[in-house]
Image (cartoon, rainbow, N blue to C red; front, side, top):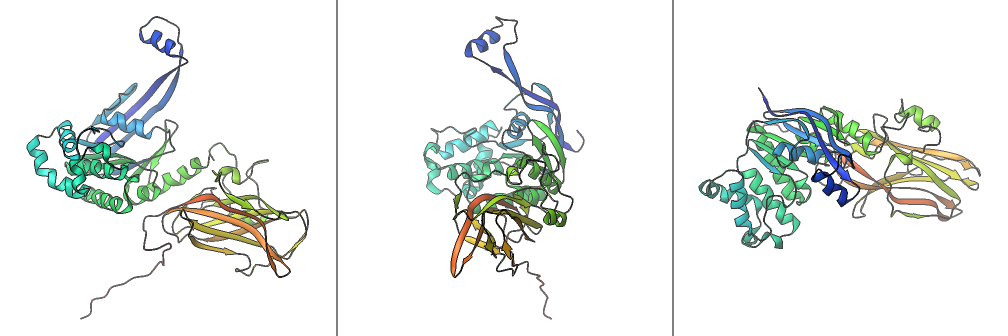
Amino acid sequence: MKDNVIEVKHVDKVYKLYDSNKARVADTLGLTRKKNYKEHYALKDMSFEVKKGECVGLIGTNGSGKSTILKIITGVLSATRGEVNVDGRISALLELGAGFNQEYTGIENIYLNGTMLGYTNEEIDAKLDDILAFADIGDFVFQPVKTYSSGMFVRLAFAVAINIDPEILIVDEALSVGDVFFQAKCYKKFEEFKAAGKTILFVSHDLGAISKYCDRAVLINKGDKVAEGTPKDMIDIYKKILVGQEPVLNSKVDSLDDFADNGQELAEGVTWKSNYQLNPNLNEYGDGRASIVDFAVIDDNGTYTNAIMKGSTFTVKSKVHFNTDIENPIFTLTFKTLKGIDVTGTNTMYEKCDVGLCKEGDEYVATFTQKMDMQGGEYLMSISCTGYDGVDFVAYHRLYDVMNITVVSTKNTVGFYDMNSKVRVDKVN
């Protein structure tokens, strides 16, 4: 294997899907020669390598096969075809509850897991203090784990996995359960692992973590390996898959300026907003004198996406159809946290962009282009068309919390946005 500690070679994982239990039993007992099932490929010809000391992330949509390949690597599942070679002692945290007995106490489960990983009681004794300190769940460690919250459970499970001195650490989305402080402690441990020359393979939907901690990323979709390379390149491709752009023609515009000028469509009959998963519970209202008929979020590569890299330039577009004559309508854009706190926003009035008279039947496109300086995380975007009827403020059409925006970041500071400070520290003689 040379420098490789994990080699996945042309792996298939095929499941038989039966129409009935009767057909399943008949096939299992060899009572029929007829093929009475359909084959579902969870993995198709999957191949990649992980070198010693690398931190490699697996990314892809739900159901793409990420967890399946991790289970095959760790021996939980067997491959239908292909070969997997592993050189090193693995500690795996595949899913909440794996390897734990719900009736046992936390302490008993620590020894159970350690024994399953090949450690003696004496070796586990030597690591016990470190495990308990890392988990930090207090006296709950003496209670049955069935009484634990999901957060407490993952703290203990990760503490065991990461403190038994593995050569290869494999983690499948487990960190999404813990609180932010525990996640920070885990990622600090990741960095210590990397510095010690150990190997990490993990699945995460946190694109910021993939970008920050991984040396490489492998992108999987519907059981196929789409590509592998730098985290940034893989995230760019993944963002297209997230909004279903692969089968859509002309889904990348050549120039944001050109797009702003002509408001071009993706393809005939295809709307911009069809590229996104919209909020089914959005708050929509207005007096109907104007209607928001389409909108888009576009990254600096010209890709329709709701995932934006922090520090990059992105564009939000809003297309409005006017059902009556309106003088100087105001186009707005707002971002809020998931808890509903306004983070930032602007509109054409603030930006001194007067629209003038919009006649009945006209359609206008407002284009907001800016740098993404919000911290990494999840936000909700709202857009609207408003204005004044004499001295009265009027909402013609509002779409509150119409879609989520994911900010992918490798550096988060304090608060909602990054001041992008230029810092220097000089020694005073």
